[in-house]
Amino acid sequence: QLTGQASRLGITLKLKTSGEVWAEADARAVRQIWQNLVSNAIKYSVSGKTVTLETRIDNGAALLSVTDKGAGIAAADLARLTEPFAQGTGGKPGTGLGLSVVRRFAELHGGRLRIESKPGKGTKVEVTLPRAAEADFAPLEEAAQ
Image (cartoon, rainbow, N blue to C red):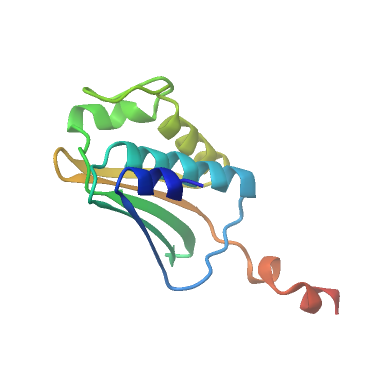
């Protein structure tokens, strides 16, 4: 959904994964998590940079992360950015809801949100969600037998 916007701004989107990653989560919530994280990364990146999306299984959980080499977030802003309507110092226009929605969706699914950032160096946002059980993503033909 955001490839066109990234392309117009000269930002490359890169996906890193070692295969399919299945989470025990609502698909619409996961889509919204990705959209909010990628949109923020594009918003705070500059032309010529790459935003990396990664999925993997980590310690039995499904992990989704988005990393940018953009403006970064000041340490004083990190804690409050997941609160509704909060924006960082020098933030770009927006509602201030993106990260609070991501945090809330992660928590509602039994997961968590983690943010690492350094001003001028970029930001990495990770969301962990419970991994789906093998039986939940087995091919339908197998399930019918």
